Length: 233
Image (cartoon, rainbow, N blue to C red):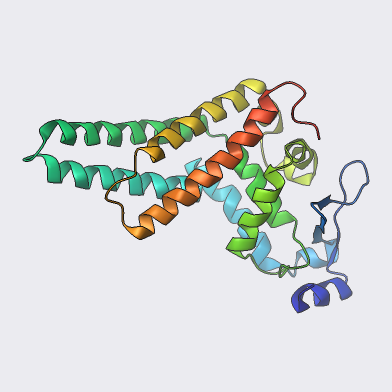
């Protein structure tokens, strides 16, 4: 338990989180907490982050990592295509086609406007462990939480039944067709990323590998949610 967490707990600013059935919110041995009414007004950064997630999703309908890796992919394909025009025109055309595929998939995501990643991002801001500063967000701990929660697909439904369900279209995000469409788009993006294996800078490679890992984590959860009797633990 870090000092910032202990101080907030002793001040009554946070409390153990409970699931809808009244059981404590514990995943893989980790107890999660949430702000009390007394603490909500004091944890401004965490709540600003929460509001920012909602605002950016409403505007762009895209997550940060999706937008970042899509732009990296398109930049790479254009750069390679320009370099290939005089050397191998067919390869240049192939890279331009890949560029267009990425644009199309990005547009599909934007137009669809739904993503279960939003649910997990919001939940990760809403709930925190003893290792987190209740007044701040650590990107690494945020990602680790989401990865742990994705190993338990039943949590998806529980998150949507908790107060965060007020901020996302619950019925649509529970709909089987929605989940199947999201799975199809995830798989298409993984295929795009798998084609990006040459001539990448180390920084771009790290970003794309992280995005691929994230997509595979969501794929496992989406598969469980769209396969009868497999989402329950």
